[in-house]
Image 1 (cartoon, helix red, strand yellow):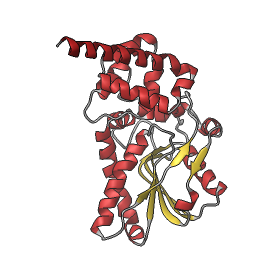
Image 2: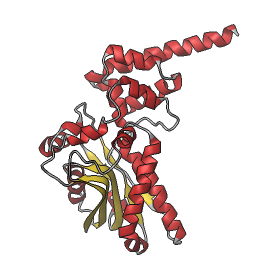
Image 3: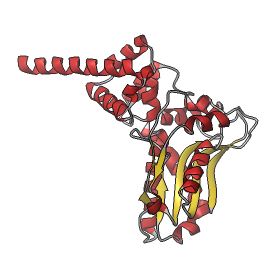
Image 4: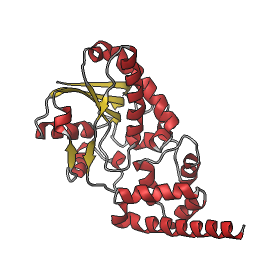
Length: 283
């Protein structure tokens, strides 16, 4: 059985039902807004699914697919899971378990600008894996931030059908585009609403509530040489190291479009480390 829930319904491109600034910062890695949206999403969800949840012996929660670097929606799922476990604790129920949909490929194309056919065509070249024995026959909650064309849900359903996985499945979204006359590129309007360039990227990276995700890493690796060098000078050595190791963990160093900037991060980190060591020795 498949059900869906979305907190916000997008009906008018000029009347957004959620705060666009907050959403944009969330998409680029500000966990403060991930937690805020997750709290709102859970409150809406529990108002409809309270009794159904209490009937379950075992609940599995799954964020959107990724390889190594979590997407923004994974942090939404993280805080949603905390709220769910708190609810289950209050009713003396077992905490939910988490599973993952693995993906093997990545791409440079900006997903938010594509229509349904283009999105499906893009992700059709990817390879996905799910632990079917772990989730088969269970009550599963698939959490994502926004449903624009439904390509994500289409892909997950394809995987479930491919492995003949049975169960009670709920797709949970923060927001959903219901007016199909609105072009799917409205998604990028929301994504980039507060983030217009490298200055905003530097600002958000230096926030205490920041955590790297797929979107911001791809954005950084796509910067031209001038912008990239400006950004690198404005973030800490620790952030550069984290950026580098996350990038190579997702095999971005094997993509021509990203290779130069990844190599530049490594070179800059080596120089910074050398300067720090020499400073220590002098002192």
